[in-house]
Each structure stands twice: as structure tokens, then as C-alpha cells.
Length: 321
Length: 266
Image (cartoon, rainbow over all chains, first blue to last red):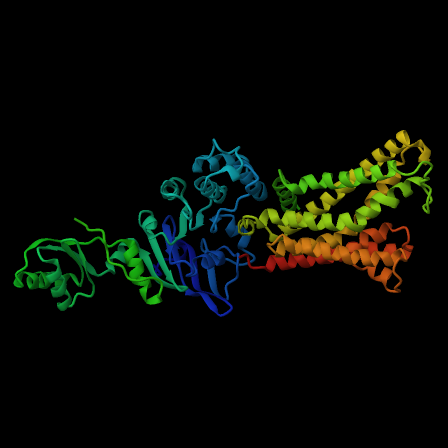
């Protein structure tokens, strides 16, 4: 990712660092977000995602490092020009509950001096035309989230920064928001940078991923590249799973778990598979099925962040037939 | 300038359906209703020609404007500043506003201008209400000797003469209200300083004897509006209070802008 030229990237951070008292919130963070991508910025709660986003938007200053937006350094002289091309929703949507949906958009439209027609366009994109005249305090969480997205899309920016956009939504609301975000790059040419700790959500949406743990970047690249880093997992269906479990452990598998009549095992390299299968057969076990396991992004994420004391390692559960 | 006018327009839009707009007319109307009731219930033959040269001056300064500048206005300014900032504290819309490609200081100055505008509206309501109050007294209590016709120029002058020095109090309250998310901080400041004002202003009326009291009152932000109209204040005190209010207000406003531009937005 770092070999991409800066002009191909809409966000470049270089050695970004921010400390709050004794707490190092963001530590030497260098990100590169390619144009027209949906870049998911992943990490557990409190790992520095929102602090990074605030620095990218100029809401807080970095102790060290540089932020480049759309190819130019973000500083006091370029701030207004660059932010003109950026939309953002940081954490919860910034709405005035006592105003209608239309009036909320009108406030931002008026501040930015945009044509009034942009309000209608924004309402259309987020599907809130029918509810535009209702007070925001009467909106559901999903509608508020969509209106927040509408606010950030008002000027149809080149770059959209969303901090936990599906936070607090029910499954239906999450689906709606996901579909909305998915359409943005193709239909409106918007690059989306979104942070999340809901890994399963992101897996279905993102083209690129950055993983952060305790303020440090642990991985950056495509989803495929992340999968390529993973170890081989197998689901082995046998007549004596307990025996298989013990044999696989003796044979050097790092993690093994029983799952009904099957055993889930981390076999390390792909080249180990024939040797392990032979071990089980030699021990007199009947093998009914051996299949590779599709490792979810969540598992990869937990694997990456385990050394950063964020979460325990979990075993993969989704089998690829 | 266009950015500032846009920001002022947005501040006004954000006031829709809020308490901040209601209290702008409800509070002066309530004060006027009370003083009208008191005036109508005075003993027969009560004259309005007191220690002021004009009977309408007496009507205003004896009750309405004293009560207004002494107690109600400082509390009103604290409440308005808290409400104006509260609109953006409520859902932390600061982070949205400050991530927009606009100059941060325009948001802050717009709040100050709208706050000052609301104080002007209350003065307009007070002026209109004083005229109405005078008409009611002329009609129902001719024995009180109020002279006709209604001197609108004098009423307007009296009702607006204390407004410019409000700027210092407003600038301090707005800065505090914007800086603290809690509604109670600007309100506590307003209530505490109103209590101090009451003590200081008693020195002007010679109810408390201290040589420095009147002088301090002409520098204390919350007492400045009253000092400007106080019947017992010397021209020198009034002039000092006016200048301190206006120049101090401008200075604190500039400091507030400087601070908010540099502030990290959590």
C-alpha cells in the first residue's frame, strides 16, 4: 500500500502521533487510502480510531506527523479548500433534534453557501424525502444515521469519512446503511473511509482494510492480502474426534477444538495437511471429510490484535465447502 | 462578511422551537405585567414625579428598568448564552460544524451577535411594553399625574441606553457557556455574579457605605447596565461603565474567538 503514489491516495498520514497526558492514543500511524476505495479502519474500542479521524479532519492537532488529504498537506492555509471536498460523520450524527430533517440539512447548506437543490439531492440519496418535514427527535436511530450521512454528503464530497456509521443500528438499519455506503463509490465517485469495530459488517463492504491496535497500525492492504497472511485451518470430520484432537495436538497443531463430530485445527502451512491426514489414518481413524475453513475477518482481526491485549484468540467457525 | 452572515442565519434557524426565543419576549412581558400591577395598585394620589426630572423617567426607573438591569438582565444573559451554546452541546454538533470548510470564529461571533440581538429584542419589548403600561395608567389611573402624550423617544433611549455595555457580560457568559458542556456552569456564574452585583449596587444607592463600591460597580461586568442608568450614579461612573462594557466586551470577544479557533474539538 505504501508504494502507491500520493496522488492515487485521498488520505495519507505520515507518522501521526497524538498523546493525551500519559496515554499514547495514536502512535506513529502511517495510512494510505486509495481513491475510489471503501477503506475500513478497524480496531477495538479505545484503540485510537476516532482520534485518528479527528486529526484527519483537523478537529484536533497531532503532536507529530502529517496529514495529507487529496494529495495536499492539511494545514491552516489549505484546511478550508480541502475540507470543501470532504464530508464527515464523526461518531454519532450531529443533528439538531428540535429541527426537521430538512432544516438540519438547510443549516449546513446555508453555512456552506450551497445551492438549495443539494438538499433534495442529499435527501434522495439517503431515502428520506418523505420524512424531511418531520422533527428529527421523532426519527428512528436508522433514520438519524441516514440523515447524518445525508449531511456529510450534502456537497457530494470526493472523500467521505464515517466513524462507526452503523453504531446503534438494528440489523435492518445496518443493512440499509451498508447498501447505501456500498453504492457511493460506483454511483457518486466518492471514496469512503469508515471506522468500525463491527468486523463482520466491514468484511462485506470494504475493498481495503487498515487494522489498528493500541494506536499502532497492525495491517494495511486489501482483504485478499490479509487472508493471504493467515494460517491454514482445517475442519476434519472423523469417527473419533477426541482421539483426533489428541493426535493433532501431538503432531504440533497450535490450536485444536472439537465441534460435534469434527475437529477444527490450525495446521499452520498448507504443506502439513498430507502429513497430518496420514497420522490420523495410521492411528486407525476413519476420515469422512477434510475441508479448508474460510477464516472470517473477525478471526484475522483478533489474531492480529491478540498481542496487543485487545481480545482473546477465537477459532474460525465458518467452513468453506 | 458573507460567511459571518451565513453563520448568523444558521444560528437563527437553530433557535426555531427553542426556549431561547420564547424567553426573549416572555421575560420582559412578565416584568412589565408585574410592574404594571404594582403601579395600578398604588395608593390614590401617588405622584410619578419623584427624584427624576420627568414623570416618565420615574415610571421607568422607579421599577421596571431597575428590576430589569439589577436582577433580570444578568440572569437573562446567562440563560440565553447557555441556551445558545446548549443547542450545539446537546448532540455535540461542534464536531460537525468545525469539520466544515468554514472559519471557526464565524460560529462563535454569530452566537455573540445573536445573543446581543436577543438582548436588543428584549429592550424593544420593554420599550413597547412601557408605552402600553403608560397608556394603561393614563387611562385607568389619571390621578397618578402621568403626562400625555407618550414620549416614545425618551422610552426608546432609556430602554436601549444600557444595552451596549451588556456586551462584556454577554461575551464572558458566551465564552463560559461554549467552553463547558454543562448548563449549570454559565447559570451558576450568572446567579453568583448577580448576587455580587446586588451588593455592589447598594453602594451606589448609599444603602451600604464603602468608598470603593461604586467604583468597583463601574468595572464589574454584571453591574454595568444598571450603573449606566442608575439614578444615583455620577456621570463619570456612567461613562466608565459604558466604556468598560463596550471595550471590555470587544476584548473578551476577540479572546474567545482566538481560543475557540485553537481549541481541540473532543
